[in-house]
Length: 84
Image (cartoon, one colour):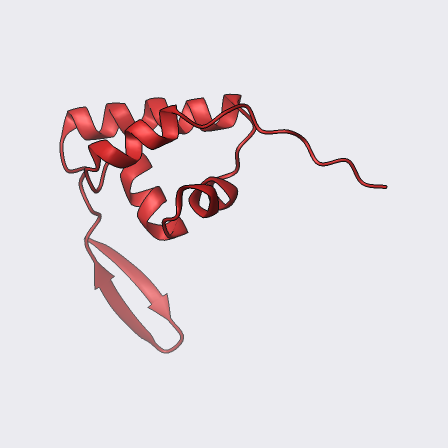
């Protein structure tokens, strides 16, 4: 249990565990792939049509989504935007 200070009061929260060891490993693999291909999590979420929060839950192994992991693996190398 973790105590979080919210001004004058404390609230206890419980650290969430990954859905499974496999979900955690697959999410970490896809997170590394996104980084290698030049994608931020926010840009990837927009391109994949999912919320940033959902993408992060999958990448951190807190939610399983085989279809989203497949879509992530299909993302191309991101073109870097050039400021003019």
